[in-house]
Length: 229
Image 1 (spheres, helix red, strand yellow):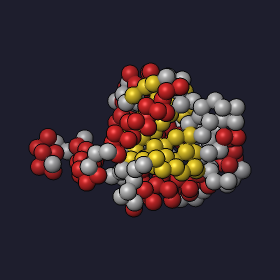
Image 2 (cartoon, one colour):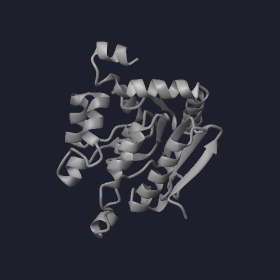
Image 3 (cartoon, one colour):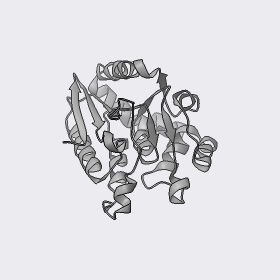
């Protein structure tokens, strides 16, 4: 059975992490399949937007992902070459817009994946956290955790999440700017899909040009950004 389910809904592609027995933990196989799927999106201009989500638990409760598979790591089977960092950078660099749809657990490595996406939609029941410091002894993260989190929510909010290891729900994620939208769990999927379809309906070439510009705006002065535009 594939660890990543792939569905096309018009010009929207859905990638769903599918290891419900392990809370969708990110082992080497998941990272390989996700990387291959994202590369296909990069090379397929018929895909105008993609969604990253997690399959529900076996009992039906929602789950994004419990992050890096610590059981695999404990067995000494951790993939070499840091494929998680390559995957997050690949998502981050795409000119095809991406939306992380988060409900249930989303922690540590899973949060790094979600932060690499362009937008995040969270359910009010989401359980979002970063436990790099608490569990691994460093809050930097191997896939860009402290860098992306600080850029998204500001340094003070990043410190609050990383240094305390607290868990926040969708409403708090939206309040601090980590999530762009928050919905009740029951309606989140339909709202997120409508959002993706609205993006997919835009001019594909216009979206790619806009994405290329917005990806650099924060790193340029006002004058440089205007010239680049």
